[in-house]
Image 1: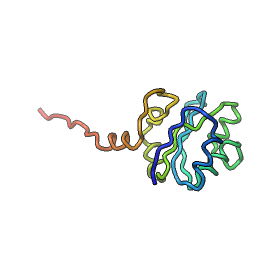
Image 2: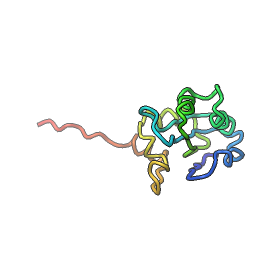
Image 3: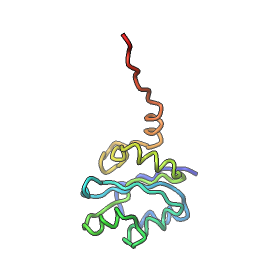
Image 4: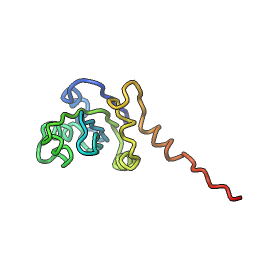
Length: 131
């Protein structure tokens, strides 16, 4: 089953029971930029376990989130796409438009990644006109 979980407020621990044993892609928003980065997109076969590792700042977390922790920057879980796979994660990262999908960066404007990605893929490029 695929569904979106868009998070506007609350602690990450409130959502962990809902995500136990679920596969999906998640978006994390940093309250301040770290160098150029303000978001992290990840994939997990057990969302609750992986997000708990990130939340606790264990050494098993990704390097970017460890650097965020070392810089005392707070982060929030912004969006979870339950049931999506590595291909979806890769498409999000390649799109370089993750901020458009973040409810904290664009309050009041929900953009569903699946719709956005389909739009980006089907968008036709204009061919130059030969004269």
